[in-house]
Amino acid sequence: MNKVKVGIIGTGNIGTDILLKLERSEILECGMFAGRNPDSAGIKIARELGVPTSVDSIRAIENAPDCCEIVFDATSASVHHRNAPILKRLGKFAIDLTPAHVGKMCVPVLNMQECLSEDNVNLITCGGQATIPIAYAISQIHPDTKYIEIVATIASKSAGAGTRNNIDEFTQATRDALSEFTGIENTKAIIVLNPAEPPITMHNTLYALIDNPDMAAIRKSVKEMEKKIRQYVPGYKIVMEPVYENGRVTTSLQVVGLGDYLPKYSGNLDVITCAAIEIAENYARQRILGDANG
Image 1: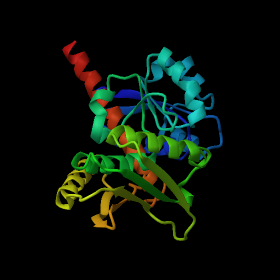
Image 2: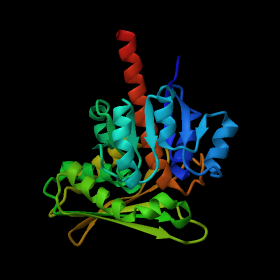
Image 3: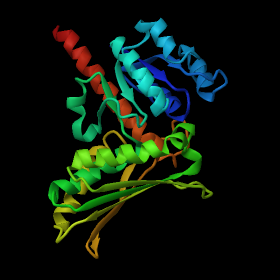
């Protein structure tokens, strides 16, 4: 099978993790790995793998548009705002891993199929990918939920420059997505960078204010959602099933990374890069099927 070529813009933690995950893909291959720092670890790894590299960032794709059909943007929210119209003009399917919120917000387990017809999809945030499906599962049982809050706690060592420079965008994008996917307007998102040694595994806690919750139905819905997410994020696990106390439903989950680039405690990296690969592979299959039927 001829593989569909992808480009990666951004050679930091997220871009490099995607690069290494592509090595396992049966349908995708990297045609361009581009950033700005010639001394980045990601650039060195790409060269060792024989992947074409550039330090001209998006200009590398502009100058060689045939290098890819799909582009992962792993830069920053402000940079993606500049990149998005260029990628649209070039006819690329853009998968945005920044909290820029330019394209349609996508959580694969919830709305991937409808996103495949878009030209730009946004993966919100790592905390969003981890918690929004659980918030959705609860909201399907209790659309009358009064309030949802998520707290995403990650190891400080797993937070690269992109995450640190986009904290405000992270919280706002996650909150917006929580409301959009659940239909619950009153939501809040918090991110905590924990400097503990040894580094902690990504941990997320969700709180929901619900009157007289049907806990059996909530637990069943959350468990079913966990099973679906694990199909593309193997390290995803509910570590505290939903409990009810003082008018509040609480549940916790963790994400153990695959360890492709950063250590396994960096589940915050894995949950969003696994989602990105899932979307790209499905887009590629759809495109190949279309060509075959064409």
